[in-house]
Image (tube, rainbow, N blue to C red; front, side, top):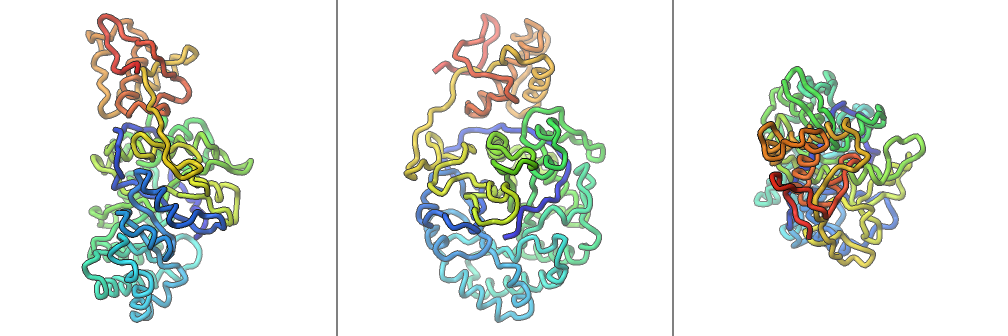
Length: 459
């Protein structure tokens, strides 16, 4: 598997409106990389996944033990044909038939294989020889699957890096690279014919590495920020993830394929890095992935794709300790080899944390009380929190408007306290939802007054 693509698209941040979900979420997936010598047994991995709200997993190849372990779990699986397989798959339909017979048929119907991804980031800058062979390989595999397993409904697609875009900022200017026009037109036509998704790897982390300013970090981590206005679409973006996806959507529309379904095949944030790798920390990784999961659960969608969540596969389930390159390449894992979480990404089923060192879910009490500003928070910080919270779906700021029950005292601190608490209560009352860039704190002292009632409970 190649290193994470370091092509980035400039965009923006926060959104973590969510409800507590007890069961798996159809739009939350995870990548399973295998460039490692310490991975847990496949059965343990299957058990770990079942203890979370993860409903999808993407393999970079075809791993029979993992595919067998995922049988009867209702976890949807993407499998991959390697880049090196593309020439034979493209030139010989019988090779595609043999590939399906060896890598798909033995696991059906018990394992829910949903997509075969032909290659990974084939059209990224590099070896141009595979580009013309990509579509023939996809067509041959699709034909082989249709013949051998017509009732399985397995789609055939391929995964792209963000380097397929020539421009991305603002999102409305998203466009594919001119040199890929012909190849992508054929691939997109195939996806349209077969109902398969367009799969892409956006990484806000690399945008921050290239522009390590505090405001860029806020954009990337779904934290409060003023947002960025797209003069082309007249839409305002509040997080990098949405802006990158909408740049892809704009590029698809410009190419004549506006109806194409977008799937995020990879995104993530490393929790550790070398000295020159800005932002690779546990706190930032936790913020990105937990806020991403919450954003997906909110069903808010993106400004160009509102009201629904894009299927998103987080990179990665485990660290890959044998990968070359900088330390970050070996530090994207959500879980350690002993199945304990590196940090809480908000993926545990309600009432549990994901596996501890024994692999057994443990009880985790929900945060409680009210979310209020810290004493040292500045008016500038609180104004940003106020603007952000009131812009989120489900947060009613009418009581702090003139004439409202909570308008007085008419101060930034008072109004921000009400709005921040409203957002905290609406996002499931998790401790991380009362962070606001380290300017908020949980309290059991009810801040309500005789005329202004704050949502919440002290228990």
